[in-house]
Image (cartoon, rainbow, N blue to C red; front, side, top):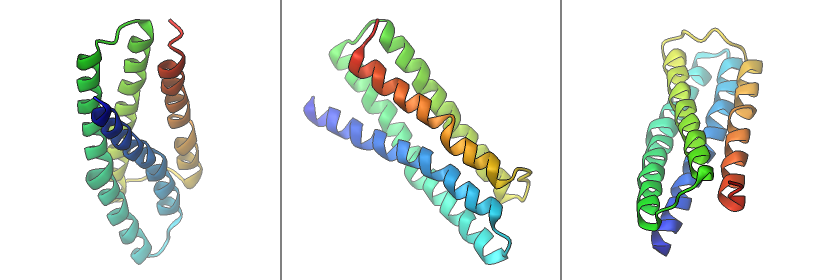
Length: 138
């Protein structure tokens, strides 16, 4: 089970790093004015999302479910944590929609929006999950 926990943590860190970094790429992409930079950001965003983040998310969910089944965790804290993980998954897919908007030139937002998107959804979710796992308040 120790190997499963270690793998779960590695995949979770991979996914969360992508959740932090992709909106930062959006900030730079929204500020870019030349074609070369815009095309470079499209490639970087696509590779990060499909090559790193999405496999990280899927493996995090698979290994998390495996741990849940193996240890039989229960309690209100787990339900709250699963809700926060579901919100992170929703955020992941929203970021995927934004990649599509950038890909087809449909972005209507400026860099300030993406700066807020970089901070607001991810930090509370991450902090909330860590607190629930460590403290198990209920």
